[in-house]
Length: 337
Image (cartoon, rainbow, N blue to C red; front, side, top):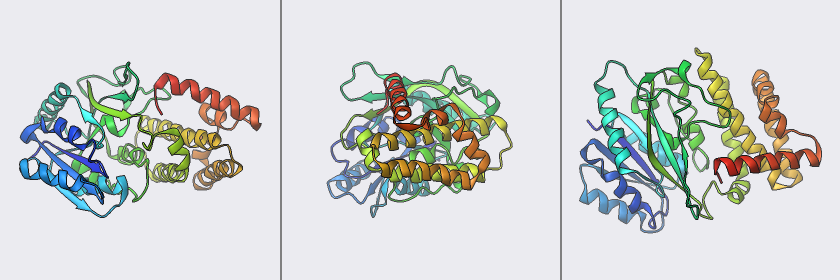
């Protein structure tokens, strides 16, 4: 039995996927690397098959018609045989020393008395052209090197777990029935959100494991690209609201964290719509909030009248300018986009 399955969604990734795969091969026979070729038209399929042939006990090549990042992750989950599951995008990579610690920790947890549903580690923004790398770490938010539950989570506003920092128990993903939508960007937020009601026990390892490359002009998190694809951001935002509405929360700390996460995503949608600078975009911003209000009035009230919600809805052109200015400060501080 493999300790960890790692899915690599690949679409026309020939230029950088080998660096990603090579960084993961360091895990040896403890890992299963699932290279998912999502209908690529370049040499991605050829490269995937070459690795599968060279490392038949570690690498598996999966070929499918193009379904987008979410469907590639779905394929990884369906084919995973490891006890835990991780997604590593094809233009990212992992740190070898941290990787070794991750695998050692997972092995110890598997042998331990408690089932751990989620392992959390740090990730590093490998932003193109920036010498000083921003590390997203959680040492002041979560207990370190111990199993804990939601009552120990102390996430401040503006901080949350991303796909890059998360390793789920594979069976949990099956139990929660996670199925990411096809042909939709930004589904990593759904991956980091929808399974959480099924998560009870967590473990945080304070190592800089995942290296998140950011800076290509065509990258989905590029601000101009996000504005162009705003309808997909809105779709994910609505799906997250739907998921929250369906939850039967048994833990108030879990509910608080998920509400805060949804608040951030709704604010991101709002700022991108404001930055678009068109009346059509402002109408979409209004329609998003109307959707949430009709879905769940309690949730609408929490989002609309939070600190972020109030900032996102400052009246008039002057209010929108203030909102954008505040966003730029956060952008510089956190190093995103």
